[in-house]
Image 1 (cartoon, rainbow, N blue to C red):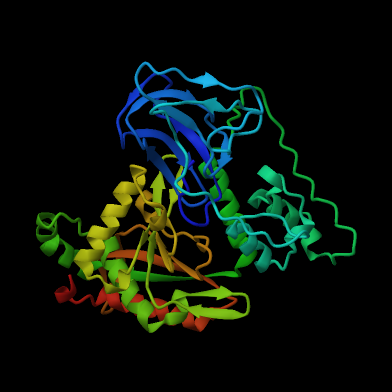
Image 2 (image 1 turned 90 degrees about the vertical axis):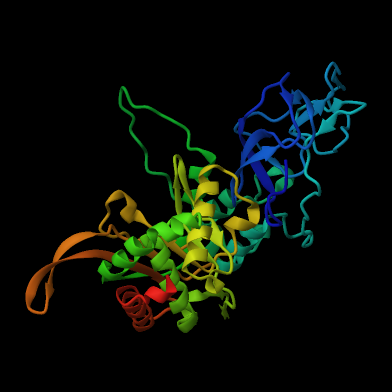
Length: 415
């Protein structure tokens, strides 16, 4: 199991692209994984024959665990008695350790995940779990971990918070868990387990709602000017290998406004405010089974053409599951576009640890008042969701007023 980023401690096998006995080439997609940060197809580290699959689809294992074995054509894989120590020393519980020789290559990570030993009264956990614990002032040592080796998982700490025990003094008896609302099933209902991605989206959204005081401001924007510029520049962009979309204009104006309104591009770390030096723009991309937010790093240094190319590139690779781990974290502000599906506007949930997110509504012709007359203009709503713990309403509205002004008076020389 490869380590897809320094904060990733485990991964889930979503799908095996190859089956036992298949010939594989080096760098050919072998299996698909899902982690806290990214879904990705994992290429084979060597050429040969897939001799053994040790981890089934749907199973979650720590990084550096052997998930399969590749050997030379005609080579046989022997199995040692249960409990024998395999070459990786990281076999899944209850599985036999493969014994191999010659060119057989176990598919393990290049380096094991670094664990933090915080003393006898603390349990092992991922950086994400420790961050949640810090935000809620929770001693991880109070939580019984259900993960491998007693690891405290995200679900463990979220369940602990839901139980009300997080708010209780350490010496007090923990409050009883809130019982789940019973769900009645009827004849003909289809019951399907949640996918790994859907589970992670659910967890992240619940954590965000618990963390941030969400407030929203909605502005109506006239896109007629940028529509004229887009039509005039469209062919030039296509010759450069980019698509000039409304998102390109919005992204350019947003990054320019984030330089002026630094608190919108900030994060909270306990009692400290982190004003980000870089503007790393997250772009929400809808997939068949969920949502992912790849990040355009250094967006504040790019012109409109550069942003167009970068957004198109990460969106295409997100849908193809070709993103690198570093491309899905480190964002400082996010844009999401529910308007693609006809929504007038949305109320998006903040992408932690950011403090604001912009929702783009559908852009369409509408009747509007122009100089005391009724005219037809290309209009759309923009919604800013922001964390009221840090961002005041006046600041949010000033930011949005500048975004509106920047779009409606876009300088053609910037396109």
